[in-house]
Length: 173
Image 1 (spheres, rainbow, N blue to C red):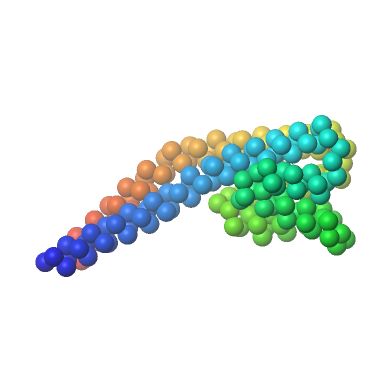
Image 2: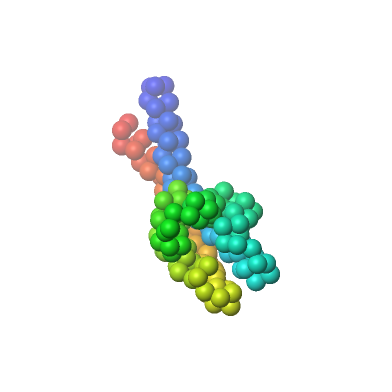
């Protein structure tokens, strides 16, 4: 009897933890989008007010940003400094694909980041700033949607995990 009770508690706790882990994907996406907005704002400011070369600019942004987002900028800077002959757009797209999968960003967020590589370093300052601002607006919209999804789904998945644990425990015993 005691073993069944302990086993039931373990099942309930594990299912609750799984629900919490799944709920955290919504929370982490919201935080990452907020960090991405800050990084894009820093990028815009650096482009407007300094004449810093692109590799150094990306390194500065990467170091000032949170690691999940900053790694993308730092990797891009490292590859630019190697001078491998790749176009920035191609290289940026590959880095966003590889580093972006390590974050909690959704595919639509990563596509926005890829679009940043289209004009960055290839057009004049005004066009780069316009493009960054356009991407920032899209990220803001995704951020607002992420907040709504977080508010709706975090509580849902935590409760769903708990209830699933109770259901499994009841069915087994």
